[in-house]
Length: 299
Ligand SMILES: Nc1nc2c(ncn2[C@@H]2O[C@H](COP(=O)(O)OP(=O)(O)OP(=O)(O)O)[C@@H](O)[C@H]2O)c(=O)[nH]1
Image (cartoon, rainbow, N blue to C red; front, side, top):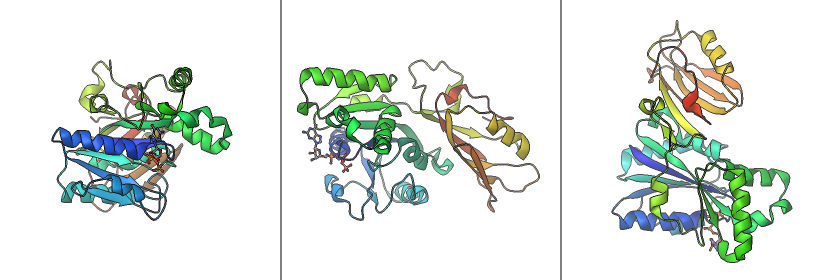
């Protein structure tokens, strides 16, 4: 399994600075990173931050969360098949919602190859102070990126006074009390901190004590042992709490030869027939999903 880190954070907050810093530290430890960069524009100036010997895929002209989920899967496939690397760092555009950016990583196709370690959000402390100047939608995105982080990098503290740093850190912590906050200048985050992240539940761990594990945004892979009745399955989906944000994968339905492609987002279910024998697995993304009652028999 290769560890995957998703770097989130508002435009200009310091994600690329963090990326460069993490790459240098991984290389120093003899660990080879690969990078996927996602930029909204057609040109990615930030790719200069990545040395030539690092496998790099760029997704330009789109945002992984809105248009590029399939593109992202193709990039991941190419990286996994064609490149040697130990860890993957994904820098998402500052305009991406973290849940949706994470969703793109969670294709059931890669569930056994990629281990999502967590979302690291770089919060621009200077911008935090001025957040009320943002439009409501932009402010919402800025806050959501912090809210869903597994680790928060409170960056640009060099631009703040000591008392401002203390106030901002406290306010950010109130928005997301589960994630540790690290105060930085130029996103200088030690590697030891990100290695501790655990955003993916592996099924065998579900029934074990979750102590020390993140109980918020995380993913879970569920494998069906037998076909399920479509109506029973949809009733189960409707019974799930609002904290399940996203599900996708292949569901074996009674009376059908091949599992159906199943998508769930914002309460909407979508089915598409599949003409290949795909692995009967779904990925579930949400808060506290370790506590969910699963359907039928599976693991
Ligand atoms: N003063 C100060 N400037 C910083 C700090 N961190 C980053 N910067 C500067 O902020 C600008 C944006 O930094 P990047 O690392 O490119 O930020 P980003 O989040 O990748 O930006 P986008 O890719 O545009 O979203 C650059 O000019 C950095 O040099 C910091 O801690 N203090």
